Image 1 (cartoon, rainbow, N blue to C red):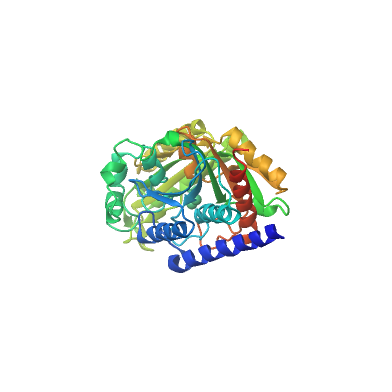
Image 2 (cartoon, rainbow, N blue to C red; image 1 turned 90 degrees about the vertical axis):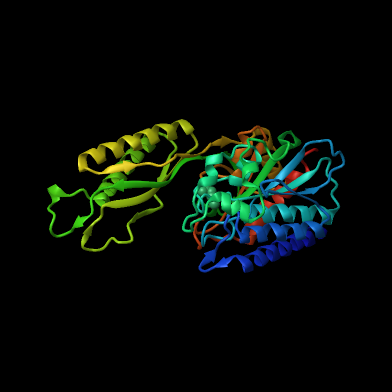
Length: 423
Ligand code: GLV
Ligand code: MN
Ligand code: MN
């Protein structure tokens, strides 16, 4: 009975946090919380307020990442971390990132309610600018935290404003140059693991009636281009016959069809691969009666294998050159932005799966198609694991949904996994 009451209390606590944050994030029809922007900052401020009520220690690193710690018995032991990102894509869903932040805070609340004194510090981490949608670069806060953000990244431009990433960071009072000096913001040896809860963002878990929670086996990496171009020749749509055209739009169409055909063949060969052109536009001056002389587009290709990505990327450049030569246009690819794929720590993953079995939480094992901060930490030697929660209507769109009952199952698994970490 006491357990039921606590579950109910945790549900109400999480619901209020989600509702409060939604209220200041609304950007119809979705929510917008730009990384290194005022709404992301409000999430951090809100979490600091909650932390004070739960008597947690507050630390903000030089990159603006937030660390909230429930002190353990032996403070010399490396801390176990949990958390996620507070930013969102433009007019996106409420739960991408925020679910992991609220799960971490609810876990802290739960530990305080039951008076759990952990053996080691439990640290809740809220990262900055995980989403690439604003400046083209993913994992900005996490990369800076491990000393891997590069000076050239600060030059990246906002998606629609004349503002650089350097300026956005500085506007919140952080020193952008200090974030790219190659020095981690914290001693990475002080962390023994990171568990990130996240909505799945795909349809797999939601198609299961019983298993609403996933234990993640690996995280896809990606290669991206923020701003590529096809340069052709603008001309009159009636006066120029086919043989005289250098139509950038038609070239773009052929490029897409040809990449899709290669993609299908690679899938048949058993490679893990997804390929997306999310931005594709002709110039503002384009019109019904104009042959487009220019198309701007983005590239996002992802796989669990970085080798697959390197080979598909080379093929893509070759296809651009081939189609360009054939049609008298030029394909131009800008700087390649790389997010490394990662595994997860088998022991930490095993601990979560065993905890799920012990607590009778039905689950499946599954890879993560989307990218996550956890990959950054695993790749610098911090053991990571992830818990997925079923959600509806995908993600990176305003229709994204999540049932709080499913969220609470994942949060209970997170809480119990942290509680029993040193048993
Ligand atoms: C993360 O948001 C991603 O793009 O996978
Ligand atoms: Mn996302
Ligand atoms: Mn996310």
